[in-house]
Image 1 (cartoon, rainbow, N blue to C red):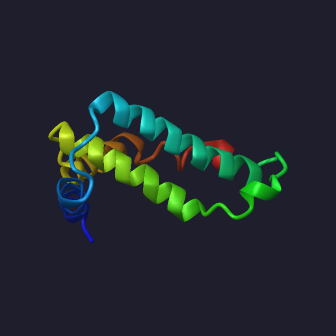
Image 2: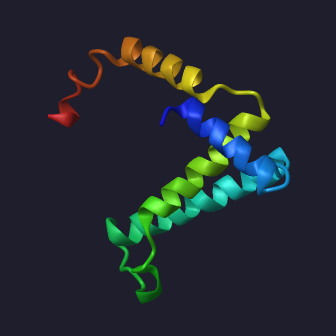
Length: 108
């Protein structure tokens, strides 16, 4: 699935099942909440915090997908073509960082 196809699928779901998009501020709050859930799993499962019993059943993939869904909602409702924006960002990062990480002694 391309990013454009994902944007169309989310838009179709919103308009047939979800009734309508939540406003941008609500979706921004939801995105923050979803990122927080991802952070909680990462901190406890891969970081130094101990994982609570109630968190052990949480699925990182599901939480990342929830984050992606809300991110796509925000892109759709603000008229952003995420695929084009992502390609542009990768081009910019490649030009800017083509030697930066290779020459970073901290990464060796």
